[in-house]
Picture 1 (cartoon, rainbow, N blue to C red):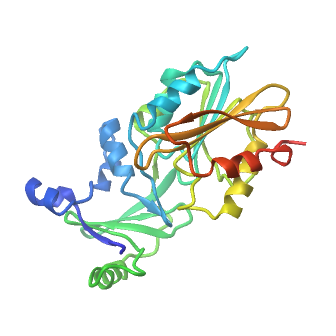
Picture 2 (picture 1 turned 180 degrees about the vertical axis):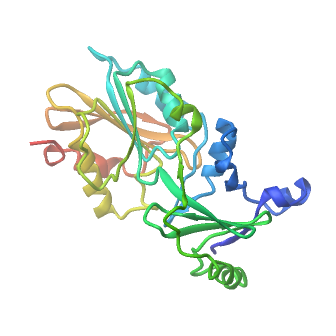
Length: 287
């Protein structure tokens, strides 16, 4: 059952907060002095639709080591999709000699405004996604919620005002990455269902996004075919699909001349491996 109402760790004694499995305080995102780790914990509380922006450092070290072992004539162009706050993008960047790195996510910013003791978070299209007080974190995802949490959450959220035009814009990219002064790095908002408009890429990394929890097989096939069109043609390119919700698993595909093959598997590989091989055939390549 869903839990749309959770204790905010900031407002409870540490022992009780641990017992109640309290949430990290997302208001930390408003603190310019927040560390990389604090920022990642706070970002992971946010939920857009059915998707939490879960992130943390060192999530898939074996996959990164595999990517770093690939050999290129010139430093590769990397497209990192669903990169959340870019924490794991930094891990990849430190391991890989890249020529250009696109760190992208559909929800790379939100808006925030205050209402009394409540801090209200909104998506970029003005939809309320979260209300936070010193003691509570409240989500609008109340259908099928554990009683009486659904009722209480709906009552609280009824008081959330529409987003004001001057609501604070909050960039959901880890400060360490935002502060990077590297012209090779580009932060973008990108919807994986839409054509990629940047440079053709040598490595496409999709971590914890291409799975059956978020998409149907039909949707996954269409998305993977779409992402395949971003891969460089004329020489081998690689797609790495990672799923480390429990343990690290990855499927790394080499695509060359319109033909895809499984290059390497980390752990048991991902459960969309066969589907990806089918989608990355000739129909998945740019014309």
